[in-house]
Length: 279
Image (cartoon, rainbow, N blue to C red; front, side, top):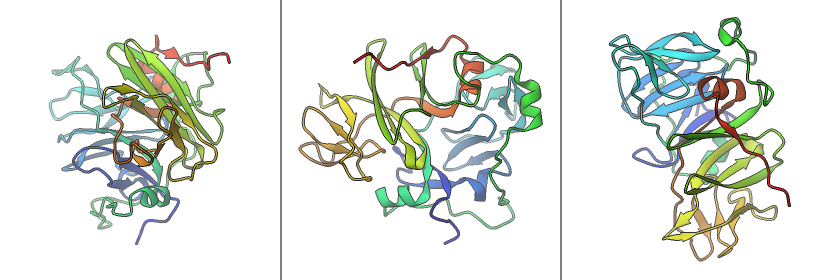
């Protein structure tokens, strides 16, 4: 097909289109915003993220605010492309509902989901192919302002939202595969990181009313690099148990997005930052 093995894709991990994926170059790199029956998608290469929300229509790329992409709705409301929260206009204060998703490589996703469907509306007209930018745009830099100094501006993080609390999980020094166990408010979560595909995602750790402790397992196959310590079940990056006593179970996705630190901190200046507990 027209998708190369190392193509970056946005993959659905749950919900109606579970297992499907959108190739970034072929569809969203040029317009930055897609309004479609599959969902509403915002691509901000400067901020290093793709946001996925429940389907809606009438949105278009508008500009930047504090280095973060701004999207305008059909009624003139202005939305943060990162958070999906309206900051100006008739719907100010409202938020779009995130879809469980992550960015990964097509070949890896296809290995996890051989039945996977790639977004197949490519006709060369509606969606113009565009290469993914490798540098920050001048416009994003110009609007950026002072950057929160707690991490490097371009640091790769997974931003997690639970209730009114937010937390950033630094990923760049996390190694080949990593799992961060954490508690936010009364929620126990696990953040999975898989460096070969530069992919991170967060899940709740309770399965069938039982709280599990997860770890990255160096000897597990690439298809299931994580393991729970209670049962020894192996889990995929998509939060599915594929080998062991809990085979067939799925972890509940935690609202999260992978992005650059400057973008997350611009929208959530009071965010917490995860630090590894002392052993």
